[in-house]
Image (cartoon, rainbow, N blue to C red):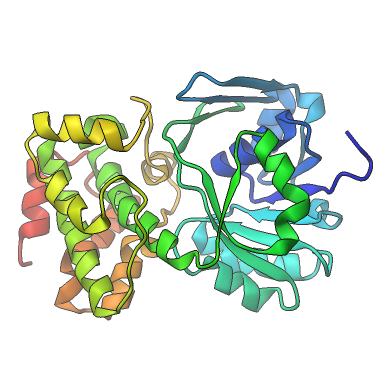
Length: 340
């Protein structure tokens, strides 16, 4: 690799960070990873294996992976990809404020719609850009990260990204730049409202979405979100072949019809799962407050306009504390439709 090649650092490298950073490293980019001791030990032993639903199979030996637990590994990076959970954004910003180069570009590749602004406040004087990872990544074994759904990386348009565009293109992860990323983020959040339904179902995404009752749960959450966004004069972008306003109708279709339409909308691995389900299985706090909770905040806390999404937040938090999980579709639908 060229000594003049700009360095990229992945800060908070879990599944998404290891996959995106690993693809960049496999294509020859100079990449360092900063994350938890558990993953550092795992990768030091097994290296990285990166696969996707299209058949990609990329291996990086442990000796070629620069994975650290010390945040100081970001100090010489020209581009910092922040992939921490949303609840850790403010703390990540405080850390980066004392480490990042003055000319470093920082991209928030996180769920939700407000993380880039939190980073901007915490890291004054740096160029902080909003970004979005639309695809799903699951862990299939030690050091093995698998992209289970389709999608390309989205990021706020900025000339400072120019030195890094070639690296992302060579990695098969081209950066799609947008003058205004907010409509794209809100559209992704609409789709991610399913994370809570998926987590409560306990099933892979494809199995969950193949069942009409679970889809009707998602349709309730999405229609409610669309109404709240409309009241706030927010227009989500079109990320699928169908306009966002059509999604609740399609989700309510009988299984046979839905399979025909969905097959044309999104390629999905049968084993793909939401990160929220993975978090519940691992006993970690979820990001439900930054997904369904965003709709609740936009509507106003306690507003009946966001009752369904508030109920999903409540049920996921209960599951985090050992409450009910693996809800059958009909039982979850009944709970979401209940006035209390």
